Amino acid sequence: MLEWKRVRSGIRPVPDPTATSMVWAVAAATAFALVAVFNFLDGEGDPTLDLVAISITAALVSTGARLTAAPGTALLCWLVLNVYATAPIGALTWEAPYDLGRIVCLLAAAGTGTVLARLAHARSAYHRLTP
Image 1 (cartoon, rainbow, N blue to C red):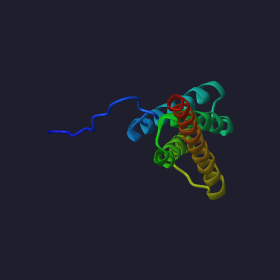
Image 2: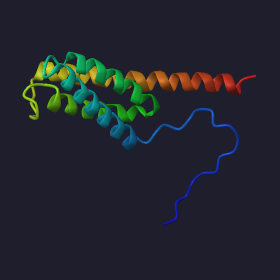
Image 3: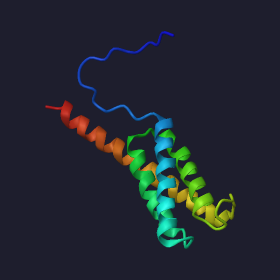
Image 4: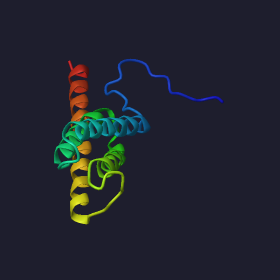
């Protein structure tokens, strides 16, 4: 199959974002690893520490992503957090105010990571292109 690509010349002012599927895969795998480590270290305790760690991870993983990847990143991280860090372990549950707050926290972290990275890239590109 023939794939058409645009030929670019010169300096690319802002780096291309990472593929959304790659961002989602890394976010889910990292969230699962964090929850597994926290469950091993402190057992099935309060998932607040898990939420904070996964939110920071979602923000870091989202630095190379498009903004449209943030909702999927937050949802995947929430699924891992809900199934493996919140009692009963291994069951998907829904408690509206509690789970909605966690989803909003994860979405805010993923969106903030993406926006801050895009602003930093745009600022550095501006400084590279202006005399």
